[in-house]
Image (spheres, rainbow, N blue to C red):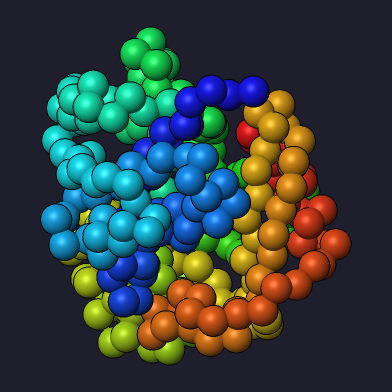
Length: 263
């Protein structure tokens, strides 16, 4: 039996209306599952991140340096927080920070902070710009995707075999429907300004939209998964409301992807 509280640090405590971080949801699940038998340390990038102020879920809160500051700066900051909080496990919840924290996993383990993250190469293989290659290796269908660096692509994209409507996506975040050249140009410039280039163009696939989240065992097997069907979406197509479902075809596709990644 454990004779001390497990201390878990969780990032992603922001709550931007159309893109809330997952950290608060993770903290809530852990609190409801383990109650007072677990200490939760909220980690954020802004003092006004709402999750940091939810004391029923976060026992303490700290600010992190932005990933753009580099690995050494982030490691130094995490070490300071660890000295104060004695973190057992770190759960990063934001896509943009995963590559950096994954690269720091060995150093964090040396000071006693454990994580359950894929390697940097595994993360790179599932990046949006490499997803078609991963899907092909796993035997899973994937919309055709093209990386572009300039909005001029849309001037004659239909002649290049890319008729509208199209989906314009950032490598890290943001996806916008474009019914024509003007909408595509606006989407490209907005995404490139916030997330940089390349920007991805993807063929529009119609049908019901579903999400699946799961946990791999680290050797390519899926330990468990939960699924939802989107019932309401934001202006950017992100899930805002949904219902729980179970779809065996979706589950099998997830198992194939995890196996291909050896996640």
